[in-house]
Amino acid sequence: MDKKRLIIYPLLFLITLAIATLGFTRFGFDGLILPMGVTYLYFTMIFLIATAIKNNSIVDIGWGMGFVIGSWVTLLTTESPTTLSYIVVAFITFWGLRLSIRLLRRNYGKPEDFRYRQWREEWGDNVVLIAFFRVFMVQGIINFVVGSAGYAVIKYNTFDFTGVGQWLVYIGLAIAFTGLFFEVVGDEQLRQHIKKGTRTLLQSGLWSVTRHPNYFGEILIWIGLYIAGLSMLVADEISVIFYVSLILSPVIMSTVLIKISTPLLEKNMEKYDGWEDYKKRVPMIFPWGKTDA
Image 1 (cartoon, rainbow, N blue to C red):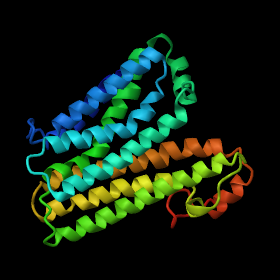
Image 2: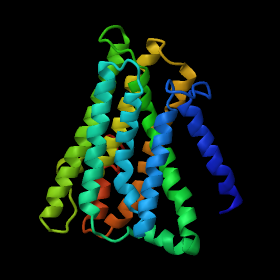
Image 3: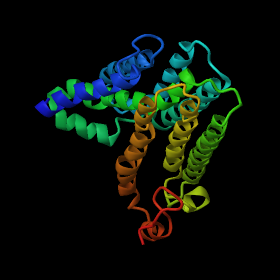
Image 4: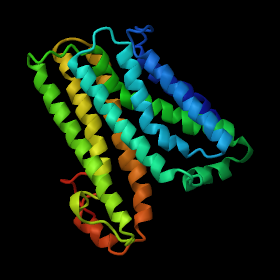
């Protein structure tokens, strides 16, 4: 492992710890340290299974469940959960379970994904150690940081359907549920298209307004949950500095999907007839965005 990464990993851990303890001030159940620790433990367990079966790509299947576990651990350690707490937990549970189950059905019994197989070859004899940090712990860190805005809402909100802050909750949840609609419907339209066996490019339905409706939906989900949490600032339930730091949640998820996941997927989509024309007509992520014309 190179010296740069020996510095980066502890730094990432400290940033995550700062979020989990609200700036190193809450190390007990009144903070988010338990969801953080359970998330790390969960991804360590996936690592052990992946190492045993020599298939690191199963971490993708476990990704959604990480949020489900984190949200429930947060709820169970929240002294006085509100209606909003239960709504957010139910939302994340549905979203995370659906994602993990869908990936399990799609990938069960298949060999290791080509990305992880390529890394396995590159890392050689050191694959176990390197994969632990660069695949599983990094994903554990990202999983917790992305989920932290939602966990903060679950734990610290005092929502009671009154006051100005309630409108931020309504707006945030409306955005999040819109995102869920795009993700669920987009995935189902793609599933039905693949089921036909035509091996053609899907260009109808939600796929006619964005090339990646599922990614667009996921971005909206985390933006929406973050906006809902702004109500806590209005009610002075949480520090401004802490909640501003939680903007990392939608920012990191958006960056990963736009800068990493989308380019990798579109590289694979270039093989389909009509791809270049499709790029010129339909925006990459945001329906109101620019096309590649």
